[in-house]
Length: 293
Image (cartoon, rainbow, N blue to C red; front, top):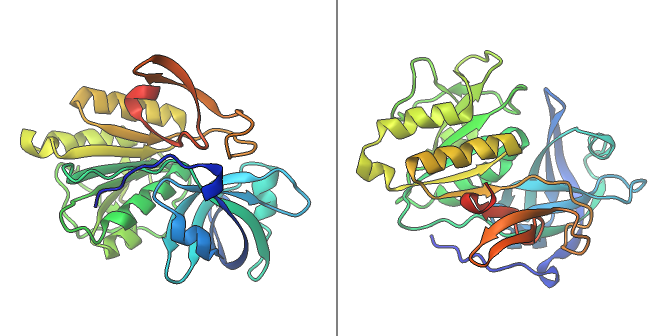
C-alpha cells in the first residue's frame, strides 16, 4: 500500500449533517462517538480529522481526530476526552441527534512499502490516529505493525491478555487492545497508574525494549508513526533519532478555523530553504518528526 500525500485544499473538504449512531462513555470522561457521515468516511485517510460544532449554542468548533471509518457503511468513529466547555457539551449529545461537521481535513500519514515493521505510538487522545493507521495496515500482509498505547487515565476499552508474541516485551506486559488483537495486530499498553498487564513506564521506554530486540536488518524495516501530547512527541522524535529511524508525527494544536484561514495553529518547520511557518490544520497535522523537533 503506497499512499501519495497530496496537499489538501479547502475545496476537498465537505460539510455534512451527521446523525449520531452510537455515543458510548468510558472512565476518565472519554467518549467514543460514531456518526453517519458517508462523504467524509469515503474521503478520510489515517491522520485526517473533522471539525465539529459540539452544540448549536456554541459557534466555535472543535477538531477531533478520526479513529475509524467504514466507507461502505458510511460511518465515522471518533474518540475524544472532555477538556473544556465544547467537549462537555458534545458529551451530552444523544443518539439520533444531528451534528454539523466538516472534513476530512489535513495531510495524512504515508505508509511506505519498504518499511514493513511500522511502529505506531499513541498517547491519550493521540491513540485514535494510530488505530486508523492500523486499520489501513490490517489487510496488507507484508506489514508487521506493532502498536504501543499510553494513558494515565483508564483506557477507553477493556484490555485483555494478548496472544500475539512481540519481541523484547518485559515479563507481565501482556495487556492489549481487543480490537487490534482481533485484527491480528500486536499491541501493548503503558501507564504509570499500575493498571494490570500494562508496562510501568513511558511509551518510549517500551519502544526501546522492542527496538533493542530486533536485529539490524529488522530495525531497518521500522518507521515510527506517532500522535499525542507535544512532550511525548518530542521524546518519540528523540527515540527515532537515536535509532536512526524515519518518523512521522501528528501534532496537536488549538485551532479556530481548521481550514488554513486564521493561521492560529502555525508551527515552525525546518525546510530545505530554512525555517518556515506551517499551519497544522492543512499543512499538517502530520509532519516529518525531524522537521518539527
